[in-house]
Image (cartoon, rainbow, N blue to C red; front, side, top):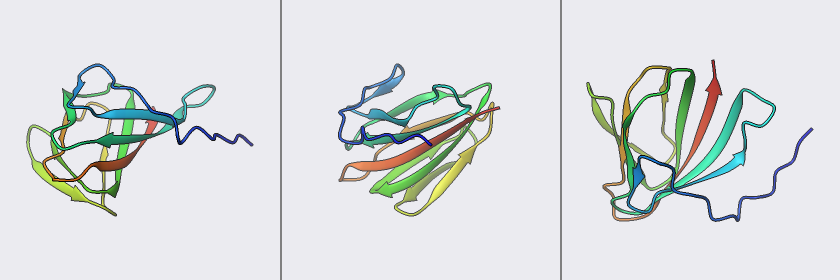
Amino acid sequence: MNIWKNGAAAGITPPAHFGGLTVLDVVPFKDSNFSVQVSRAPKGGGGEMHHHDDWSQVFYMVKGRMTFDSGKERFTLNAGEAVLFEPGDPHYTLNEGDEEAEYLVITVQQ
C-alpha cells in the first residue's frame, strides 16, 4: 500500500500549457505504469494540441467545465463528465467558463 498526502501542494505549469493551468502529481508514475494528477485551470487556461504515443488518459471533471478539441471534434465537459484519449489521439484543452476548472487526469502507460 502507498499513501500520498500532497493534495495541498501548488502544482506546476507543464510545457505546452498556458494561462495559469497547474498540474499536481497526486499519484506519481514512480514504480508504476499509471499516475493520477489534479489539474486546475483558471478562465483562459489550457493545453496546446498534443498527443501521447504510449499513454491513455482519462480526464474526469470535478468542478467547472473544460472545452476539448481533438482536431476532429470540439466538445465541453462539465462536472461529473469524462473523456478517454487513447495513445495517438490529439487533444487540446481550454477553460472557456467563468470559474476555475478542476479535473483529474488518470494516465496509464501502454
